[in-house]
Amino acid sequence: MSKGIDANELRIGNYLTDLFGETFEVDGIETYGVFNSKIGDIPLDGCVPIPLTEEWLLKFGFQEIDKSIYRLEDVLTYGRITFFANQGMLCELGQSSGYKLGEPDIKHVHQLQNLYFSLTGEELTFKLEDNE
Image (cartoon, rainbow, N blue to C red; front, side, top):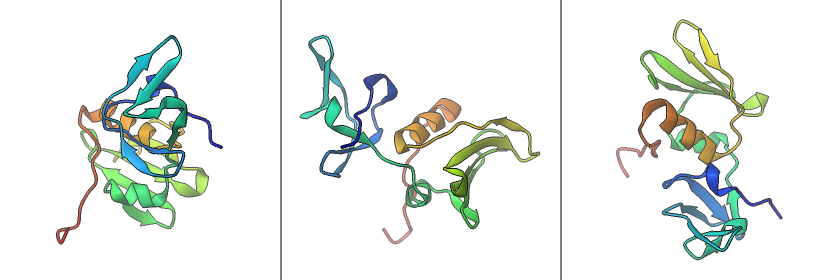
């Protein structure tokens, strides 16, 4: 069984799964008692972070640049986020000039959502096809 998640890692709008593998969106966290929290009817220790995969990157609008390299352009002024899937989803925050702001090790969907919000002040949302 997977380890649960800490409440301080979460924001409203983050995606998680329950112990049955059902994906849901955090709509609030209720704390009761000293060490107990829940999201809706799900105890926090029953919430599982979603591994960040190439499928999730594509859902969020990243473009495949090369095999196992995905990029989201214009995150900051002339900035980008690049993921190297063959390196354990290493994220490179950089500008078009190649200057790097850092290399955070992002492993879960909610971490990417939180990073994007921290950089832009906006939510990272699914990019839908025109026919959807």
